[in-house]
Amino acid sequence: MDDITRKIIEEGQKHTELPDAIPAPKEKVQESLENLNYADGKERDEIDEIEAKEKMRGADLISPFGTNDTRVFKRKLANMSSSEKTKLAEKTATRIYADAELQDEALTKAFHEWRGTNWGSTGGRTEEKVKALASDSLEDFEKKLKSKTLSELQEMAMKLGFTPSFDRIRLISALKQAYLKRG
Image (cartoon, rainbow, N blue to C red; front, side):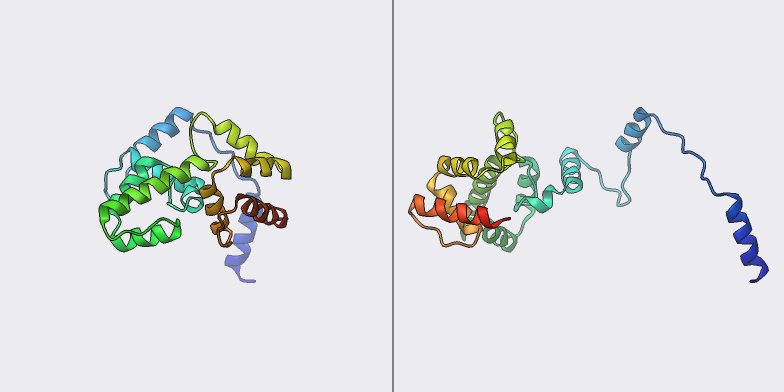
């Protein structure tokens, strides 16, 4: 070994423990986060902050619309090109319109329907939704299916790759089979 390597090893053996970090007060951390400046120089508003928090939580990956917040969705929709709106409509099984205004209305309606029926939504029935999703019994799942409308059942079947039927009993049994296969 050469002298430099030997000196490095000797110095490293002397300092085996790292000094404890001094915790910063929560107020200072919050203040520094609020005064954070971005490298691109752009001003951030409340909607940008909500979108950033959703990305940290993974809501942009879970939601087919890329968000669970109405304000963020409206901004995204306003900034989308017509081809991006068409792709989103295909992804979310929403009807595709040639008219931009009708397309926006259809996507907004689909967003609110998705948001209202999914766990991440807000509202007075959130606790019921949490309990229903936490339950793992087949009877509870069947009760949930029977409480859904025919169009909701058809949408669920389409998402699972089934051809939607107009027979409720048939749809419920197909969805129960898919539930049992999920392992």
